[in-house]
Length: 453
Image (tube, rainbow, N blue to C red; front, side):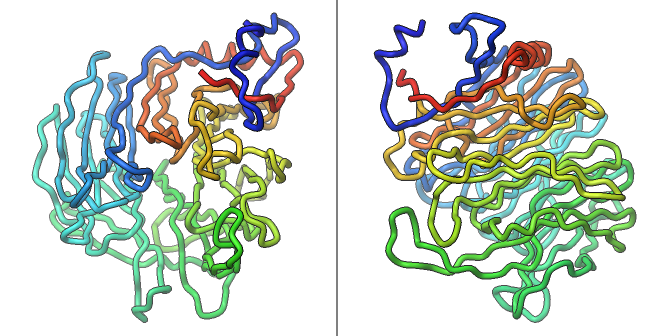
């Protein structure tokens, strides 16, 4: 095996290789094979026409439901919906032909009766809508709120949609973006919208620019993670650029509330490396403990793309504990943390997935086959140190992790820098756990020349 690899080496690109000294070298690279996979959709044209918005849910029968906002070469996005029923993928159902271009706010949720709720942003109306689907039959769309701003949907205790949104509030200026809660008390006949009274953690002059990261409603509690008031920072205008530009950055805040009115806030990351344009954060809940992950932008001391960092933290009512920050911040450091997704597999045990590709995806010379998405674990015996590979391509969007009643792991991700596609994968959790254990004897992560297939 090794001799065959040597003929396929491309210099100056890097890939993670995890070696275990309890097995042969041929078996040491833990690239775990899925039990099911599907290319959900391929972007129609250039890199700028990729899918920005997608979501996935798994119902009580372990059927998989996927929604996405897919671009067209001209005109609005198409809101597509696909489902896997009894292990068989059905044809695409078009929810709307009027999706907001480059939307990041298409979401899906399923109640205990297998009613499917899909929310999206309208291009022509510049507003938030949701549609109820049952057994593949699409209902009437319902107008929820005016404004085409970033939104996350959840279901409340009565299985009714609730939304946390970005939105403008008086004074109506371009930089005055607040967060608001939108809910219904009459089954969706009308909607109540109110701006969140979030205590100020960090303030910056003349700016009120909140950035929504994630929202979870669980056990009667609202949980959100967001970028606090934005501040501007001067950075280079791109890799190898000679000119500078001003960009918005944020601090990361976790907040929770039992009534949606009174909020408790917890500052998580004040590194001043959280770029608004690469604001990849994730939130998972383990009872009252919040697990947060964030990607720290690849920019240090005004030098663009010299490496990145992933920062993970655990938050309880009494403390904030940093549990993982990779230390490699210079070339050939990876894009570690980009697209970060988190999952509580069981109480006290967590999974995280993120891009672990080299810097090369971002200098326009990257061969997509050199990419890698890593799956990491945390439990009582380690702090996110164990990693395995789940995909041989880069993550170009958020990695979504879901767990089914059969204890399988479902993953949805926009992958592959050169030819972006939306990929679905399903893994057996026993295989995942065995792959971690196989590398536990001597866990060594090496950066080696990548393989060209």
